[in-house]
Image (cartoon, rainbow, N blue to C red; front, side, top):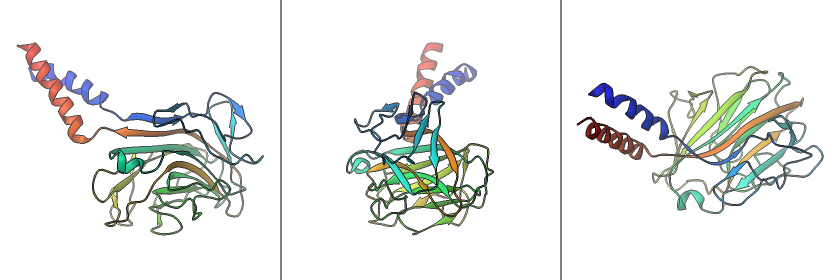
Length: 259
């Protein structure tokens, strides 16, 4: 009897995955910039990308890559609207794949959650602020920050190799009174506290960030080059209790069928 239930449980638990809210694979066109571009999917609202229209801005190459020149400081984002996470508490994932073709130094590509958007500055700008966000340098270093500026900066212990795509995924929990986040790199949990690996970062009481955008950005820091980004995805994760309830329901259904 147990064996007959297991396939059903597995199928149900596999279906209880993150529901994509916003996604852009950048694979449908070429353009001099992405300002005003509609993402491939947006179930949150009708907001499009906001970015600078300068000639050196983030561009599409028509083959599923967003070209990211790091010779200037730039930020692009999609508005979620004000108070999105307090109005819609839940567990959210924000992921992005970044590739540096070579180790060209300290310049970087970053992404994360922000309170505002200053398109001709990088993610450290006071008009953008908030977090969590990170930046991945072309030399392989990854810095993670829970807020704007340099506050709470953590340098990951692992250095990543240029030439290979690296997928970063934030998991932000806005259900609890004090929000938390985790970070995964290529599916591996990271230390975001400077302590033990995999430990969630918890915002201090009363300091949950007032987030309004999901964003990507570039930072000029010495020698610069051109990197690429892909698979920008913002998704809602079913709460664990809800997922377990679905699995339990599937099990009861299987038992009734068996009888």
